[in-house]
Length: 332
Image 1 (cartoon, rainbow, N blue to C red):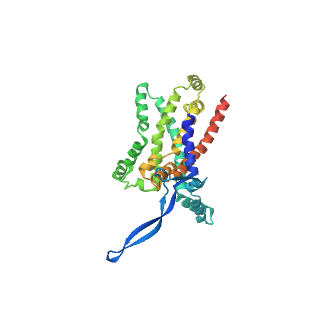
Image 2 (tube, rainbow, N blue to C red):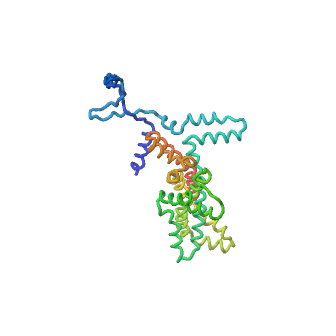
Image 3 (cartoon, rainbow, N blue to C red):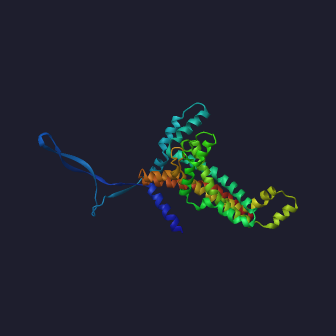
């Protein structure tokens, strides 16, 4: 397990710290240039060509560049230019101008939406999943199986397919757009505006991840001991008080696990950004990694984004893990 986890990470860090290029050399090349009357003239030029090894393959050179790829990834120069371009006297106007300038820098724009997506979806799926778990726990035993199956449907479909399903609802002429227009609300272009496309992606994230929180918490509810609940009822505790002071503390380790897993998943949001084609309005660090590798064919800058993604996930998980450790230590 250590090798399976460590080797890919070591390889990514190595690619991020090095720059590779094909070694070239200037060679003399003679060509015949046509002139008038059928005459030709020989032209000699020095042309860069790849250096070949003994097998006839181009020689690849690996050069250690340290943090240069990381600096290029986060676009330090673009960030400095954004700060310089937002020099306005009023602090409030300066913050607004700085935000607009930084939003034009690829990495910082992607990081901004990635954090927004993570911090908005996480509490919503915890609340929604817990509410669904409590509601399902009150349903009759005959109906629970059907309710659980229907609730888990978003998890059964792969992220790309589910993203496409949501995307088709909001495209021009889609079900949601056509319904709103038929109801007299006018024409909505959800995918052509920054606010609406971000709201749709966040709503998709909640819809896709809430069933995971639901099934974990629903399973946890089956293990809550009856004695404290019965004692609370005898003492006159309301249903909310029983949930607040007995059920939630008992399920706190499950809330921590769900938060840990969802923060890792949400920080690596990729499928809806790809499917929705929302790079201009709602980019993500994970999509930026893919775009740089596939379209710019820059593996070193792409791995630098991957390193930044891992670092971002670790930074977000540290407070959660510390809190979980303290809670577990206090229970011992």
